[in-house]
Image (cartoon, rainbow, N blue to C red):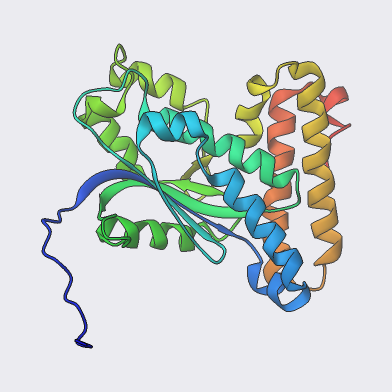
Length: 259
């Protein structure tokens, strides 16, 4: 019997320009140290199911998705010519839903979304785009998903990323409803503002979510008041929450949701 290792068959492999989304769970090391294996498994399954594109979207857009421990990478290869909707807009909106649903289960994430070159063949995932996505995720620090400036520049240059009837200005009018500039001049997915219009009944659903968001922050501020490294993340989230509420509601209503 030939026990020699088999050589991989040759295959033409090239980098594919793609929209790359890189997401991981905040505080996963602490979870491993304090939770049982079954509870960690449940958390990872929730994240996997939430971050994965829906069946209809996956079949339509040919996503690649890979999970490793607390990390998820979504890759959407760019095709020539618009698919009829804006790929960048669709991915940003998807991340609004992802953060909403995870926060409702007490899970905070950070990450990045960018445009870059990547390979997803032979079950492998590598390339300069993935490295840049990782670097941006590390820069995020706080529970936010950074939007790379290069992605927005590529949106201007490449009409394939925009809706079929949108120029750059029109596309950005829609995208600006989903992103926000932070104090360090980085853009991030502005899920707390953007999610309001996604409820079937915003007058009921949005206040309920604001209270859920508020309660999660208060819980974190109390639980980690002696842990400065974690506490600063919840303080950032508190500032984001309060500024969103103040910008959305008159002061007498905003008081209900302010922390």
